[in-house]
Length: 51
Image (cartoon, rainbow, N blue to C red):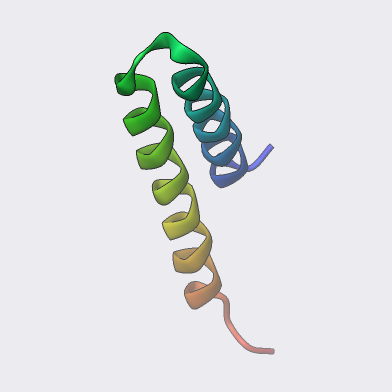
């Protein structure tokens, strides 16, 4: 499984755990993990060669 996909899934799980009531820490960890995952996707698209 790709690293960016793992980060986005882990971010979503952490965000859900934080919203359920386990603490604001999980919300921030989830947001940061999802942002890093999206940045990795965008960086990988920019590095692809044409042809």
